[in-house]
Image (cartoon, rainbow, N blue to C red; front, side, top):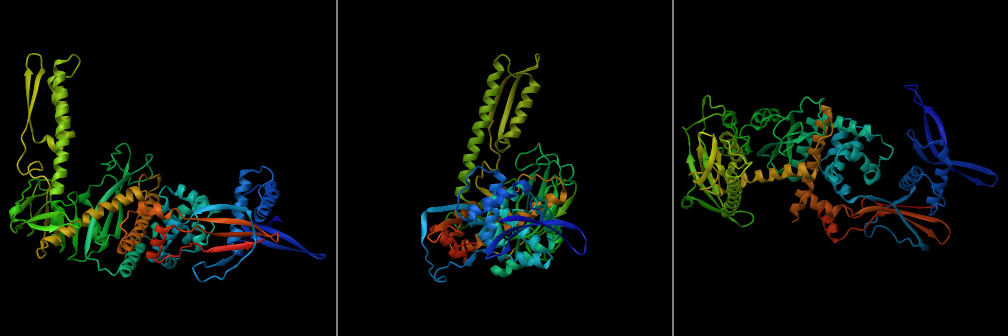
Length: 618
């Protein structure tokens, strides 16, 4: 066995380069014949002086032998990789589903068994199935992706589903930890990192077309008609200054990372939970300023219902929605809370808790002030629906009690310091400290009346006194009450509440994007690479949603993280045996799934043996 270097090239470019092949020779009488065992490609970078050691180690692995002498790590790694490719390309494949393969017995030395090339396969198997259900491989074919580009793009998305990290980490995962190359029939071991970045570039270049086709395929897959649109924003922070990205701006970080520039991701979702459109905004963008542009780009039909939280439900946005023929259901920004349980309708939540809804009636001729409080705008006719539950009320009471306890403890500490040496006593400093406390405990501070006793001659504070006086119509007097407003006038109370609870699902979407699919942080500095990173995360979420929705229909209501804990237990492994006749048998297959994983595979309609079984005798 030896490695042959061949000079070759293309007739079109007339560029010459070297390719490498692993060649084996055999003698038949006086005739010696040579046979290419494996094409090693153009990027074979093992130094020539190590070629003999590499060939010897390959022969040892194929013969089921351990290394007799210590060899360089790079040689062992490359030898294992080459042997795995030989088995994948030249081994006999068989579908090991029950009843499809005839028995094949041979005598082996059980003491010679060796296990190697352990790679994760369970989560990859399910993730690839999800992308196929979305029709993504066919979409990429139609967009002109060649085989390498398609495999790299799919692996990039699957990597975000399986082990969400940076593209660099995904590249290492594809090469060293995962069997994704075997599932996609592509060798990622010799693929340079730049190919992964270029796959991201190609995906973002076709973003609109991919999003539209994926959503169309989802509708056909699950048979729903898009009627409700949910909209919200989240942001992520950069590691570094991101000076090359014009969208990287300082703003209000939802992760409290005010030391980093931010970028904002806006998602428009259907009521089914699938993304209809995504858009990347500057990190300093305010929620209320993005809604109109997103709806216009999405070409949402008039009459569609838009569900938003209070951050986006500005008076300006509500007026614009009504004037352009949209329906809306939003959380009211009005601070005053009103609720009359005697007039409310009782419904049951999915968990069996009682929810009370107090419909306040139409407000056809009311007016409201816009955000800048500079002009009056006319609100359309709408309903105001106050919602209350004992569970939410108890939660509000517990939070308020904790905040009150902490706020009063800080006031007591400040007051006690007025009689101690070295503590804050100056009038201005004391009022400044209390102002900061009010900001810190704003949830309850508004209900406190704070009085001071000052020494006017010295400009110091002698005493601080406070008393709790809850404001009527506030969270303290009406715990558990929140108000919805809508211009959809024909629904019953339960339908309003059920539709509003979709916002809870939206919150779960962003939690998945941020924690389970690695949206934070962003390590890229170029704008297009950052946009590509976020778009890959959105596509990964679409795949996760397919899996969770299909399993939920079968009674499995688990988070993606919990599902991965089950999927990732399955591995692909190569087993090597010495046979009685002196030959060496190599078998590569997936480990048997445990009962929990079997049930999930059955409900998804997937093979229990991802990648199939390959065997080779040498």
